[in-house]
Image (cartoon, rainbow, N blue to C red; front, side, top):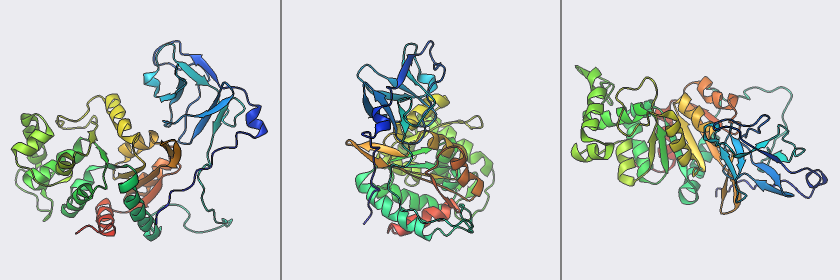
Length: 363
């Protein structure tokens, strides 16, 4: 039986917290500009002392600022959303001495004694992943009933016949609450449903078809002619695939474009900041996030995902996985501050198949 880790709040009755000053909030002088010595948030729970009371910033994210609203709400916002006059928290100490406390060890975790010297301590292709898979199966079954599971997908997830089929099954069975991706994932998935190819190559036989290099462009053009992805699915009688299943099950998906995109599809956000906002709307609800084969989307999602969520007044852990064949891509998130991310080094097509099998899907 899966159980969430217990959260241990700081003991604010301790003398150092009782004697700490209130946090300082200074009005922003201009739109988009934080005051000098602003406090930048992390992935961890952060508390701010206001009128003698320690309050948790509940909807946090990395690399943002904390604004005190008139109703007392601590609003964690991106720099681009700062407005002149916003009361922005300042202070660079995180130990409570400036009324700011960053709580890095709030979740109970059994710690084995570490040896001074030991092999295979990092995540690599040699890491044993059996336990990781078993824990993930238990987690996903729990989250399907009690949480919100967000998946972040790169185009490689749509290039394989079985991976598309199994991931569609995950959507159908309720293991996908939202999906974040770029133009390529949706384009090649729809191409596979429409023309049975991905970048012109048959998704099962791997045979490259004559003029196959037109196929992804033909797909984008056909979708744009229909006006939207749902209209394209209906008009062209599309009946399989990742995006099809999202539309059928009303699972929200956010597609954010890049400078290299073809087309793009009508639903793709061309303004990356609007796209980032739409992604964060999904991330705000997520209690488990799994990123697969997309370094930039994974880092972007990691930067906006705190290590915790507040659900019905209770603080619980956010689970974050990154899956890639590249050790560099898997470990990059930790380098960028997503310290609680767990990496799995493997082919994402194999990963999806293993997850589907472990969850009992008919594969």
